[in-house]
Length: 68
Image 1: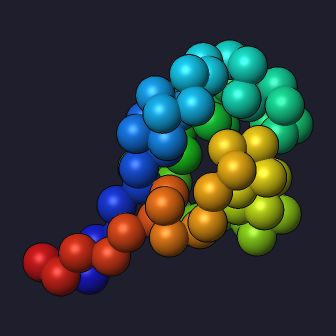
Image 2: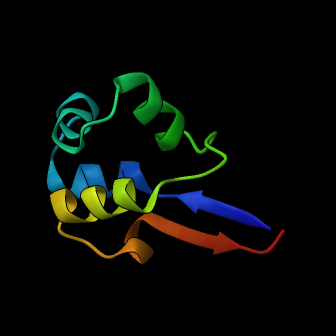
Image 3: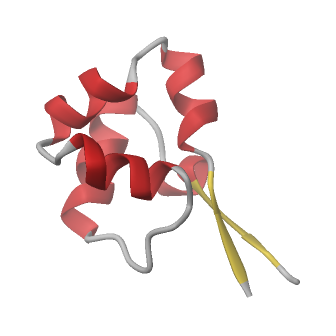
């Protein structure tokens, strides 16, 4: 099981930098980097909610399941 994080795609579509987005959603740039690179083991629903709100998207636009 693999969950793919498509934050780079959504950030490019919305023309927003990692620094600006991390500040808007209230997490550190280090934690945002871990999430963006797919190294995170979990994501809080409040963080996912904030990402969707700021990027004006659905959770499925950010998270994708790929069978290994």
